[in-house]
Length: 274
DNA sequence: AAACAGGCCTAAA
DNA sequence: TTTAGGCCTGTT
Image (cartoon, rainbow, N blue to C red):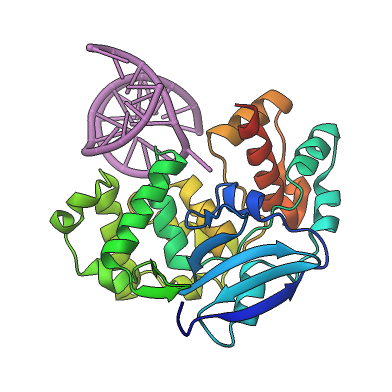
């Protein structure tokens, strides 16, 4: 153990379930410890998080990171109220109760875009493997509690590579998508910061101009990193659930600004049923 | 062994 | 506007 160890307590007023939040498919870099804590690295900061009475306890490496973690865990939003609002019928009430405690993380924009580009046609273990290898090979080390973790590599770093450099990572056909996205972002052709200030339609169109980014990946980037709470990513599980429950169709705008959260509840619940 | 996977792209109706 | 097949690779 070295200098690291800054301890933080973050009060959580409503509901937050770390396990659900980290396993509901929105992020890929948190690992569960035997004691129920989670170790990971986000926004360039390594941390170990555990749920305690009334909130979260964090051990981390950076000073003055309280507000960043509070924002990451979306602590300013009232999830109990949001969950109530998306419970528009018995199915949604069941799904929302099953997913109670899920929070939509406010993640790094580049990492999120890149991770979901990698996610296509992969399962979670494989996505995690691809992301970890990318970080280990090209990210920067951070030491937490005697362990070295690696940040997600900056777009500039990846933009300087070519497909041969990525071959050992076994990203498959996704490698060229990652490279072209890295080049677009690092060159300023695609300004993710600017996108976070625009509307959903504009941001989505810009994201989809990248090769390898279709509707689903773009919606994930919008919801999980561009703070567009009504983005509604439709993957095979959500599509399945919607067909089963609403064969006549469902206009997701009924959920308003909670549509993204509704999608997470549907996804998490449907996936649990296999 | 052959099919399929948390999707996208292109070609063809 | 919708549909089928291919794409890298790992897993079953």
